[in-house]
Length: 564
Image (cartoon, rainbow, N blue to C red; front, side, top):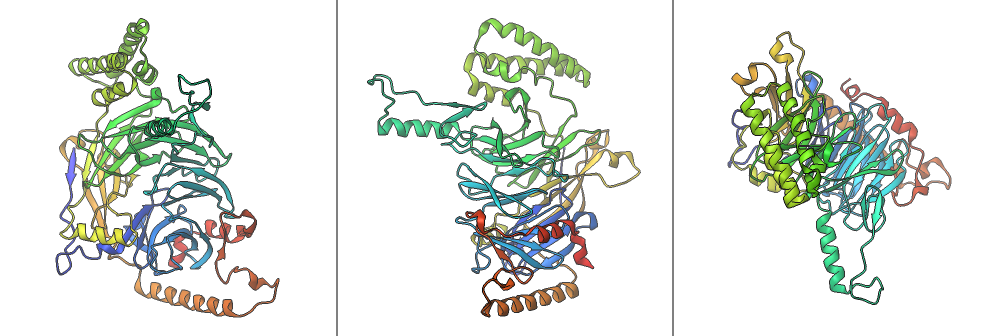
């Protein structure tokens, strides 16, 4: 099932997508009720519950990252590097209600991604991630990662603050607990000594190089899940055999979705076990595509939906039932087993379970037979070919298909040039940001059995689709475009925005004047409190200031107070 939207917005003179290059990045907040837009002029925030209205705009300079904390007034921004104050190595914590920069954190490397919840702030650089306490902005833990210039990271969004998990690409040289060597189920593995020597664990430079290359290759696609509250690694997941491209947690943190740079399959791992037997595989497509974002959402009937958006302008929607996968109990062990004595019993047990499950969901005899043959073939491949080839066989034979495909409006002429221009200015590319939301309140049953998919295309056009998943309606129609808005053109009400920007500029001028005056040693002016941002050094915890009052006030204020 698929649906195609209308053509993209009209072009500006010369065939270029109007204003598309001004948008450098977009991101949904944790409950997917708002969209933060980083532009070459500043930041905009759109409310999905208010008809895609722009509820906040601030022209602070070019930004390449803008992340919200739910619907609070706390906003985290990273500049695009057009000025020293808006450097891509500086993170600013901003209050949208008072329009005051609470803190300014410098970093040694370009910031690739930022994630936050009620307890923690995670800043991702090219080779590491740092966890901060959100109330005080004190650095608490630093974790090495694989090369991660794209900022691939996932963080839970628990509004109660009872748990805080973050998933990161595993570093090739470190185990899950930050020590040299590989880690499997928490046990460090040592590299054996070279055979034929005098007994010493010596390896020649060429041998060490080959070992490092093999180790790096074996660590591609490995994810480490960290507990940010208790500061330890929870589990390590062998998710893919290619570098990771996107990850996402479900709302309660019990599932983690991953996609690699190949983009042909999406996997969902059950936590905290995260073994092969606790994994489901979904087929996104046959040809490779860059998966831009993964997003979970509630599905009718108490299940989950997963949306996977790609650079090709499509959003694939997969449905996860509330119950476990039929073959979760034995899939991983069968695929990796090479002992023929237990193969027959395992196959028969798995076959009986799979057949009964398929009959329970109403699959016909012919379809059940075909699926059963595929399951048996995949497990026989596991016995004959080994773990890696068995995984490929399972992907081809057992991967589940999408229940809907949303095709975003075709981009206008000149979009590629606009993308290149935005990327040159530090942008990440806006095409593919997506979210899954519950259906709007309505009386008709077909709407109650649907979800809403919200996504952004390459022309910075924010589109909201209604997608029916159950009943007969989904067979007769595809996704229906409900609303759309160009986030590059839309702006907050002019009078309020101009007044607040003028007030902010006046405050900045006053702060600069006060900062230029010599202050007495030990006076309150030695630290920029309400008058200016507190500049903190993440590498020196002793230089931190008590920002708990300002941070708590920002987290407690609603974003929509800025409208009043």
